[in-house]
Image 1 (tube, rainbow, N blue to C red):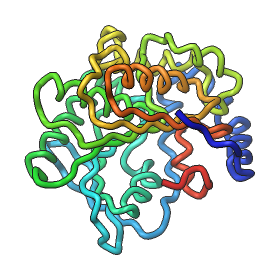
Image 2 (tube, one colour):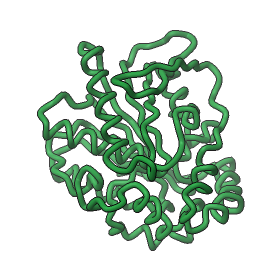
Image 3 (tube, rainbow, N blue to C red):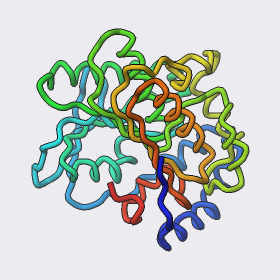
Amino acid sequence: MCSSDLTSWQTKLSAFLIRRRIKPRLGDMSDIGRVRSLFNQPLPPPPGGRWESDTLAGVSGEWVTAKAERVDKGVLLYLHGGGFIGCSPRTHRPITVALALQGWRVFVPDYRLAPEHPFPAALDDALAVWRSLIDTHAGQRLAIAGDSAGGNLALALMLHEKNAGRRLPDAAALFSPATDMTGQSPSLVANTERDVMFRGEALAQLVRAYLQSHDPADPLVSPLFGDLDGLPPVLLHVGADEVLRDDSLRFAQKAQRAGVNARVQIWPGVPHVWQLLWRLPEAKL
């Protein structure tokens, strides 16, 4: 477990603006349509990437690659965040292009969203895409990554496939993942004022939209409660002031006790999924 010592002035300014402009507009998040419209505002990606629409196993999405055709790390399944109710491959191009520029060929599914499509629709889509990838890229390195709700789906996918005896990703990278949907992480309360974007209690609205009547303690919903033994190496990034901070810390601690190579990096002063703000020094992937 490690943390950075300094917060850049660019990140401090970004955090200030998010606190002033976004957090009040999100409010209690009971109006899912309003929250979705805020989440769905795309940010410009870094230069040098390209994207191409495709459909895998009946799930639409896009391939993201570097224009320079430098693909040497393998294939990466990226599951975007958005509280299970918003966002898309387009909104997350700042991250997926950055990963492509590092040598990955990235597929980003446009999985079904709640409340129109509650659990397990998003997970079913992610599983279908993953199985298509392992069928068509069997000899290549395959990894998985995701942020926030997408990090939750990545962990749920790994638990599901482990229990089914299928191939797991070679490694996973998770940015501020939600791992406990029962609301037991202390930072949901302790960091409510410090988090520049969310109030901890408001996230329950997104949980209800996603789960509706499903049990939040189901390990495919709250991966923290699953059997973590046998998972591949996992890297987690989370902000020190995030309401979801302890979701990462608790998961990493349990994973380490299970013998998983799990490492969590805690960054001071950063907003939720700051990797989307690719110009920030702290967002360099």
